[in-house]
Length: 113
Length: 112
Image (cartoon, rainbow over all chains, first blue to last red; front, side, top):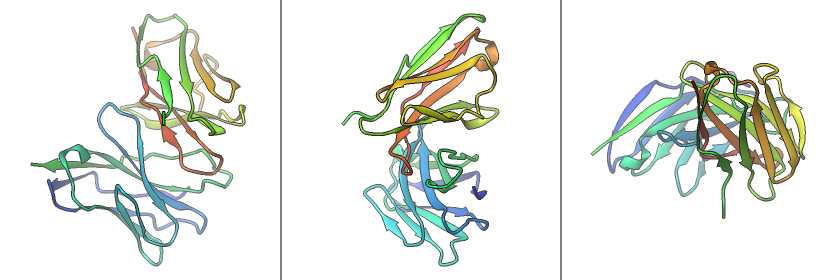
């Protein structure tokens, strides 16, 4: 699976949008971009994933550049409960590396009151 | 709708003892994964099963670790004998083949 690069930490004010970037310049055509987060002492929580098109669900939006070399996770109205480590993962769920979600260091997002 | 269930949530044991961690996947999911998380190594995949069959156990650290999935609704991860370096949080995740993995709350293991 392709390596991803994320900033180690980011801050955001409560109520504002949090925009978390991820670089995945070596992503292959059949690899999806997955985002998980891990709130302290909990298991990783699935947020969203996409292949080429932008995606939105009740938790977040995912913007993938046209060349697929980078993406941005957007939490539209961050709350204190969104404080967590956010992981961006390039993952081919149907390929030979199936099952091997590779979690990097992620981005520690801190939402301030 | 229940998510992935793991037990126990916390385990404290002494070096040399056998430890058994348990996992109940989401109903209908046919793939199950065991991960370990430590400060030094982060989250790493230990083993995964598809339709109750172990597919890849290359992440299992050594012979002291074993995992079984006797049926579609239950899996165990056993450490025998346990060592202090096995102290970590162990997560179980499940999915339908080729789709998103959903994680349980984890078991915090401390080996003294």
